Length: 304
Image 1 (cartoon, one colour):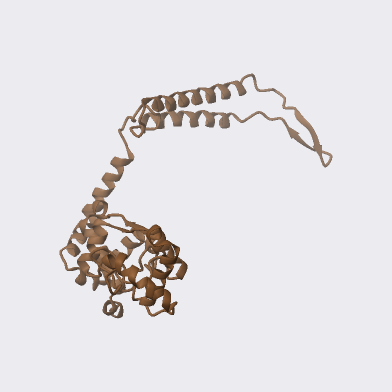
Image 2 (cartoon, one colour):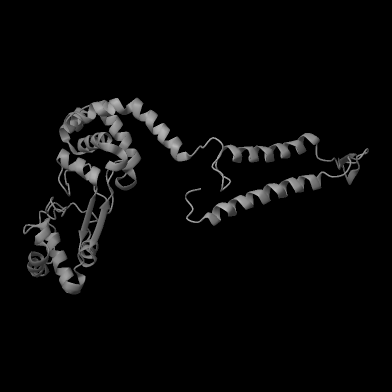
């Protein structure tokens, strides 16, 4: 009820409920008025010579079921919130229910989470039981973007390789999960023009050893050093402190086709990973970081 910004809607719901119940009661009374006939007539239809359909009135027990249903609805709305203006006799709310369930879960699983929280992330990543918990957390909170296999997709990093935008150290991974990340690449289309975008794109592709137009790549190198080196470095190997990707390893966040690379240069990119610390807490973030760390660690993969 507190979700509404105006008290009008609370009373609107309440009046609709009252009118609905009144209409249902009136309809049942009106439809069931009159005496039950002593002799039941047929509907006048006959099949196979002697099969007739009787015009039997509604059974009394069926009528009572309608009344019971309406009374149940009224009693329910007196006990639980739902009428718009009355919070319910027992004061129940889904928020309180959620908080109680979370408190019970915290009492049950809190010691287990705390046990792993005090350990180094690498040690947790080597514990099979801890990884099972981390995997469940990942499936719940991360698969929507990174995929159930953690392979990522356009705009969402692959977590199984060693190509980290912000670094693959355990504390860096944990910081990314806890605080989130915001990555922005400015659009350069207006500055470079179509030809400039094409030339820079050719040079960027050449950094990873791909076949390109040599003349265009040479022309694009100068613009790259002027506009792109500040983030990606003069050698194009990126800067984890800024989340600037390495352009020399042929691993592409948004796709490595010529058209996609040129679109990134021309229109820019903007990516955001939400912070999870507030609703997960440090212990769960710790376990999640350990699981993600294990995905790209070859030694841990071999041990598993």
